[in-house]
Length: 93
Image (cartoon, rainbow, N blue to C red; front, side, top):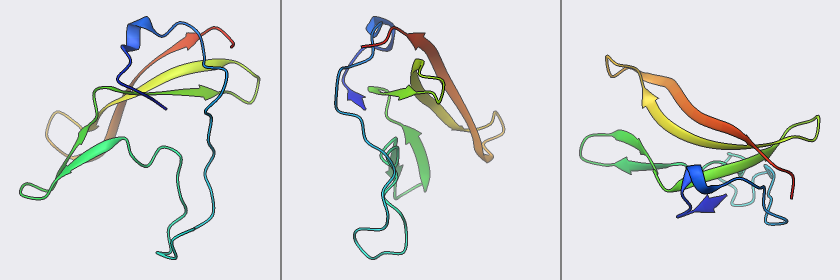
């Protein structure tokens, strides 16, 4: 996870800092997901909004690297669960 980095400026995957999903560590019944912090939640409106300055770098099972940013959680009508992503290939570390 890269926080505060410009999406377009990321051209190479980082050497380290990678995480994976982990079993439930805090006993809330939910695993600790690596990408769980992608959004901000507005308690007044109950709306999720993407953290614009958050970019994930993922490694594919084939060994390629990709940058990914979650753009939105809603469709044009405001229906939740219709995620849109921005992504692009990056060079290996």
